[in-house]
Image (cartoon, rainbow, N blue to C red):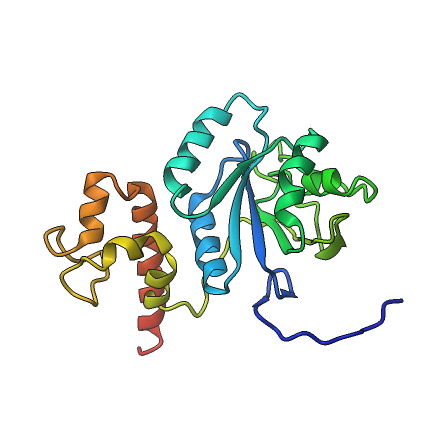
Length: 243
């Protein structure tokens, strides 16, 4: 039975999974199942708002579809966060890549179902033998095999939290201003917008530096389109409070 030795101050807190003081998150994606980039963008906003460092982990790089996914991910997220590539079936590859990243950190392992989170965990901790699922033949979507969250101790002193996969995520209580603040690559360009309160959606490119950056290719257009979608959802939720 465990014994509480010390109470540490709470730096952040997540509801799903229920864990506090996470320092970084490994967001797993793979060629199959098809990545949900809108979900990834929402996770990035959430983690940046909590001071959690997000790291995108492209798994299943042994698959033939890997090149297109790697190019897409690097084009959209290279300016935003660290990106690493692994094959979860190659235990040495996983350990060589992820153990140094997880050293002395409290790391959350997260992502869609069937992207390989449990396989990664088994590679990092060969003795735990967690159940591995796969894709549903009917829907081509992941089957959730992780049903609870648990903290594991890594050999290098790091801690890693496994979490159930999911396909939906809502940024509850996030204001439109939060979406602006935590879509981090906007900051570099937004300082050149004509107005300080520019939301980078309604304004024309002559006024909005962010829109000019999208038109010139300095900002990824797909990321920008999803930012607009997330912003509008937050705005609708905020407006409903005053109806």
